[in-house]
Each structure stands twice: as structure tokens, then as C-alpha cells.
Amino acid sequence: MNAIKITLYRGISIFLLAALFCGTVHGQGRTEYLLEKNWKFSKGDFPEAVNPAFDDSKWETVRIPHDWAIKGPFDGNNDSQNVQIVQNGEQTASLKTGRTGGLPFVGKAWYRNIFVAPAFTKGKKAVILIDGAMSYPKVFLNGEAVGHWAYGYNSFSIDITDKMKAGKNTLAIGLENLPEASRWYPGAGLYRNVHVIITDEVSIPVWGTYITTPIINKDFARVKIRTQVSSLSGKL
Image 1 (cartoon, rainbow, N blue to C red):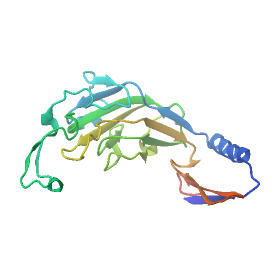
Image 2 (tube, rainbow, N blue to C red):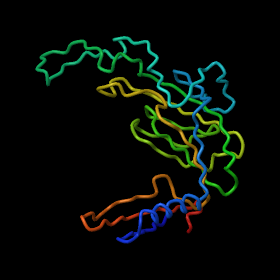
Image 3 (cartoon, rainbow, N blue to C red):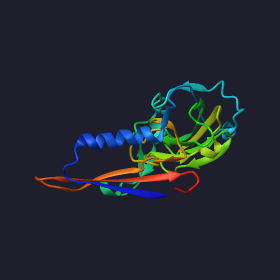
Image 4 (cartoon, rainbow, N blue to C red):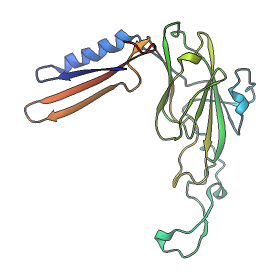
């Protein structure tokens, strides 16, 4: 992977900067699909759901973003703890509830989506971008593992080129929320957008452009743009 550094000095207008970005986006042939509708969802552990032939017809149909715990039922037993809060001067442990609002967020769940990305053809690159998944998501495409994320609060991306098909693709995501994982309600499920991004073989990766302003004063500002360029072959 090579890096291209561009430094813009006084005298280059904002218009030129905007034109630079427009040309870059247009030149790399990027197509993005938002996987928003027709997701199948079920609470519980279903490792067999990674199989494209798995029957999810009885699962709930949901739309992303989705939080499985919001619908309840609310119950103090969902987040009860027998704990001693030393900061409050407590000498012994006692039963406490309501820490996370009594929402049933603890447990495992699975999501499945069948999608088509017409822009994906031979020589193209495919990346899945997940803006938020709570938590510890394991991602499978067409029955094979493509990656995981050992957290829940950050966006992450996975290169899925090797597992993508030109026609229908089956995406399966398994999640697990652990008990006592947060002091407040952490959310549950695919709580932000899921994208499939198709680019040319040589492209700017997700979050591949960095803009900083190392110098700003009353007379001028210096803008520094650092862009990464990647290739499927590793050669540029």
C-alpha cells in the first residue's frame, strides 16, 4: 500500500479542494449499497444460520438500524446485580436493579440478509462496512467466515472480495451481549447502518483519506491531505 501526500498552501481555493474530491470519487468508480430492508432476525444461538440454505422464514423481518431489546419486556430482573458499591461507602453487597433500564439486552441473536450487488464483477473489490453492532459480531458471507469485531461501539470494515458472488449473496451476522458488560444500557443488535461498497481493483480504502490543518493563524491556513491507495494485487 502506497500513500500519496498532498499539501495545499495559501492561494488554493476551497473550490479547487472540492473539485479535487469530486474528481477522486468519480475516478475510482465507487458504488455503495445500503442494506436497510428485508433483514431476518431471531434471538438465540443459531450457528447453522451461516448456511445459505438455512430456513429463516419463521424469523422476524426487521429493518436496520434495529435494537432487539427496545421492544422489551422491561423487567428489573433483566439487570439485577448483587454488588457492593464501595464508592458509596457500602460495607456489604446488596441486590440492585435498574442499572440498564431493565431492558432485555443480554444474550445471543442472529441477523440474515440476502442481497445482490450488480456493480460487483470480475476485477472489482467488495468491502462490508458495519457502522454499529452490539456486540462481538461474527460475520459470514455465503456460508464462510469473513471476519469479526471484538467490541460493540466502533464502526469496522471487512474485505469480502474473495467470498462475494456476482449474483445473490447471503450475509449472516451473529451477536452476543454479555451480562454486566456495561454500567448503562449498551444497545443490542445492528443498531447502525450496514453498507456493501464496490470499487475498482485500485481504490481508496474505507477511511483512507486524512485531512489535517497543521497551521492555522490570522493570515493563512495550511491543509494537509494524506490518501492511501490500495490494490487487490498489492502492486501499484
